[in-house]
Image (cartoon, rainbow over all chains, first blue to last red; front, top):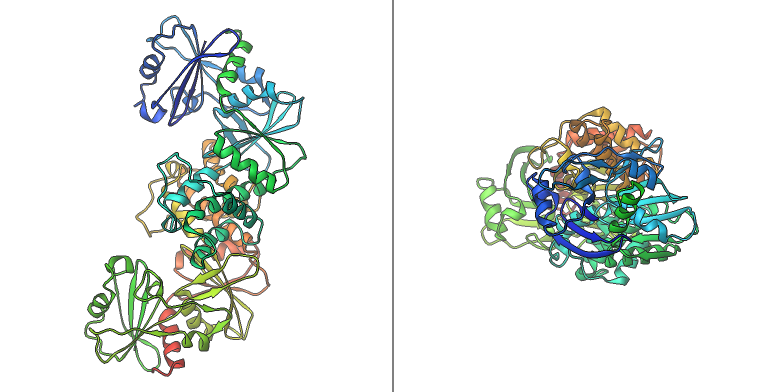
Length: 302
Length: 302
């Protein structure tokens, strides 16, 4: 089968064998925004030469701005419920193939705003066989919008989002604080990590005043020589991640938190968690292909 | 005398009589950023025809990026201490005049980041004679960076900042949330006010999850039809102001809070405070000229 991880700004394709192991993989600058709405042509081009009969796709490709809007499956949901929500998509340019898109998940917690994700549910399905025991487990997928997922007995029970990565990017690149920092690296590239400044930011998040007050401290500490310009991005990152963890009341249990994502970012979260007294385990990022294979199996496609 | 309120993006000049009443006033698109470093020429041009011997200036004109960096005066500080911190500036193009710049204020609270302001101290000095009794009084000057000032016996005792207005502008105009809202009005112009959505945002700020989580609710409530696109800016504003008030633990006393600023924004803060059970009094914005006159008197210049 072919497993596709298709997001707003990225496209990754995996060719899997019968065991779900990756035999070949490709990535392309063919995120949804770059497709001009013609998703079928882009897909046919990017998987040219791969003739596997089943193609399963996860991510924002199933959103309103993607190929086909696939309704959210409500929590709690495990492999069975998510597989049941797969939607097949006709594709005239790919005759003889079965094409499907994985649904996202929604959580409707009482008395708070709804929560949704698309793509991360497939990563969590890929992760589940690696988790020790039935749980409960807390899984964190940090990023532009960090996802916090509670897992129990193979089901995703609940879901929380924090727009931490987006706040970081806005404040780092567009705010008055940005003028006090070295030039930002190209979009999508991490700032150099200053562990000491990061830890100070995490610690500062515990103080009184709230986030909008703490952010001003990036400016004033620079003004009074308490923070070097080169340290300011790491301090800001620590402040925001610290607020995310405290706001979401992590750690809520004594168990280790499972981190999934790029190595630089998961390492930062692991350090922030350690500063708050929580253990964590960092998992490999490439879990989407495995999750898609499990879904195809559950649906009897492979 | 001539009183000048000179900020990063605005310039206002007032011609005052011996009682400190405004006889004439001008404003110009001559904020510091528009001056190309030649502040003296801009000032001479903007006050052409006014021959008063004393010219006193407040605001970011006294910052590192202004005409002359004037050291911060530490809190607690009242009229006497701030007047003592005035710095005179030579200006060859304005012969026979005395030109001075008002210092900003700094607060160094134990165990937290320093706090600073430039310009707001002069507004507070203008407000003081209007406050009932010796205090303590809480004064809030909402804006890009909201300032919360504690006043006692004619002195500014402490100072806190919240970057609420800047967060609003970034999230309203540059974030993924912006795509879900109607086009933003021109910079510096307020969104239409939806009091019901604003109140819902203030209420949501009290829930668990933290700001970075609550912000995602703007997206998901829209997704599930719980929030109209046109309501989203007011909801976002309520969320951010609610977090500001709760983060700074306002109200901390039972006394009414004194709001100084533009009418639309102070009205929003008054409503948010009322939702949190706090009374407030809205004061006229044009207090800078009066504060500058009081400083000139204290220094024996008029």
